[in-house]
Amino acid sequence: MSHNLRDVKIYFFMALDFEIIKKEALEAIEKAGDLAYLEETFKKYLGKKGKIAEAFESFGDLALEEKKELGIKINQIKKELENIYFQKERELKDILIKQKVGQGSADILLPGIKPEIGHLHPITKVKREAEEIFKSMGFEIAQGPEVETEWYNFDALNIPDWHPARDMWDTFWLRQSELKMKNEKIKTEGKLLLRTHTSPVQIRYMEKHQPPIKIIAPGRVFRYEATDASHEMQFYQIEGLMVAENISVANFKAIIQAFFQKFFDDKNIKIRLRPSYFPFTEPSFEIDVSKPDGTWMELAGAGMVHPSVLKAGKIDANKYTGFAFGMGLDRLAMIKYKINDIRLFYQNDLRFLNQF
Ligand code: YSA
Image (cartoon, rainbow, N blue to C red; front, side, top):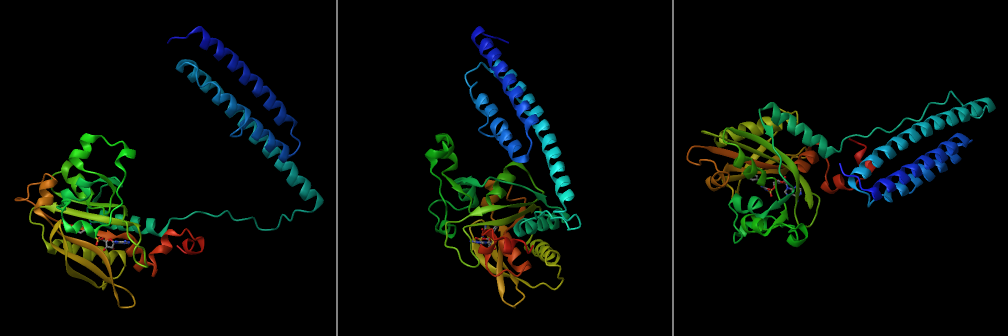
C-alpha cells in the first residue's frame, strides 16, 4: 500500500469535511418540525445534488487507496444519516395522523388505498408458458445475442451474401465503426446486425454441443419492415432444435402437435403444415393454426435441418438428422388472447395491459 503525503493530507481534510457535513445534517434533521422541512433537509444533504454528493465528486484525483477508504467512510455516514432521517419521518407522520384524528378530520373507517401490484406482460406470460411446456417434454433453454454477426445470422444457415433468400429478412445493419469490432472478427464473421430470427442460436449451440440435442431458444428479433396488424419491426420468436440419430418429420409433427394441444388446452386444435422454403431446412414447411373464427394464422417456419447447417455447427451430417422450427411468440399470444392487432403489445397502453 503506498500513501503519498499529498493524498494523505487531502484525505484527512476531506474526512474532516464529511464529519462537519454530518454534524450539520444531524442538527437539521433533529430541528425539523414538519415533513416539508425534513424533505428539504434530505435534498440539501443526501439528495442527488446534495452536499454529500458534491463532496463525493471532489475527490476524483485522490490516489486509489485513499479514495477507497474515503468511499467506505462516506457510505457509512450516508447510511447513518438515512436511518435517522427515516426514523424522524416516521415520527413526524405519526404526529400528523394523531393530530388529524384528534381534530376529527381523518375518517379512520375509510378503506385504505390499495397499492397497485404489477403484473407480467402478455408476451412474457406466453413465453414462460411455452418454455414450461417444452421443458416438460425434455427441452433445455439456450440463448444467443441480439446483436449478431452475418456469419451466424446468415452464412452458417446456408444463406451466403449472394443468396436471394437474404431478402426474406429485411435487416437492420449496425455501423461497424461505432461498435469497435475488431477487424479480424469482421473478416471471419462478417458485419454486425440485429438478429432477424432466433435461428443463429442453433449454430451457436451446435458448435459447443454434440447430439443428442433438444433445445428451445426464446428471444427478441428485429426486422426492417413495415408494420401492420400481424407484423412488427421487433417481435419475439421461440426457436426449437432437436438433433439425434433417426430424427424425422414424424417426430417434429408429434412434438409440435403436443405443444399446441397443451398451450391452447385443446385436444382438437387444428394445425396444418404447408410446404415452404428456407435455405437452412430441407424439406421446409410453415405451420398454421386455426383461429376461433375459422381462419388460419401462420405461427412458425420449420423443417429438417439442412446437412450444410449441421456441418456449420460441427455435427456429423452422415450420422445425425434433426428438425428445427422458429415460432412467433406474439402470434401465439394473439391467438391465445384473441388480439387482432400485434401493435397493441408494444404501445404500453395500460387499458390494454391491465386486462392480462
Ligand atoms: C424455419 C426453419 C427452421 O429450421 C428454423 C426456424 C425457421 C423460422 C425462420 N428462422 C423464420 O424466421 N421464419 S419466418 O420469417 O417465417 O418467421 C417465423 C415466424 O415468426 C412466423 O411464422 C411468424 O409467426 C413470426 N413472424 C415473422 N415475421 C414477423 C413475425 N411475427 C411478428 N411480426 C413479424 N414481422
